[in-house]
Length: 328
Image (tube, rainbow, N blue to C red; front, side, top):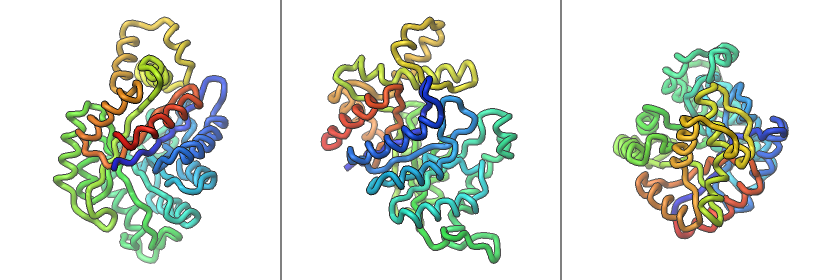
């Protein structure tokens, strides 16, 4: 059976501000737990006006404290921005406080702009050592690292499940290290299937995972009509399109205002392409597309990444998706 989980980036909505976005994330997590989802993950972004989630382990602690059953983690901590020892200690604290509920999703992205990278103290080249950084981080949990006399308390001896977010060669690294893989169909389902096949064929069993495990992440919206479901995705899709041409991911605007505003032909085309690459529709339509996607990827789990201006509509969409679990 395919599991379903949720990633929330703490999107900022126009007029609400970052503090409200973070409070919304914690409240949203409680609602997602009530719907029966398997995991709730938060993300790491720095210097982005439209995303409040800049400290994922801190936010994960708040989410775990506001929930009782759902697994809580990061999608992900961008390891090149941090020292592996500190990351291990942070997840050790989370696992000690919420045993058996914490996940450690790891990514290789660095700051989006030169100014952010300078402020973080890590340039683009930091991502080149991602494999070594992951190995060092995992070593602090097992006690097998290159620092004599150093103990990553309280992480040492604990087993927080690690997940690798695939970008570029990330699927190959996940296979080499024997870690679960999180991957998005950003280049289409064919490229996704090829990457997953490489991952499964090259997977080496490890102390962290004995078998390959694939999580496919994508935005999904379910509503009474295809038009209503697609509209739910417009706010984030437009923010993505805007960021490509302006270099800034803005707070989310109401979808009706976005669709009524003037756009260049290029922007309108990009918006349509972005929406077409996501999954939306009636329950039957979404069920068909999800079945095709999970089948192509052999997915063990689906991570829903939907952001929307209307928080209640987003939760309603997830409730409708939850009703599909038995048939997808």
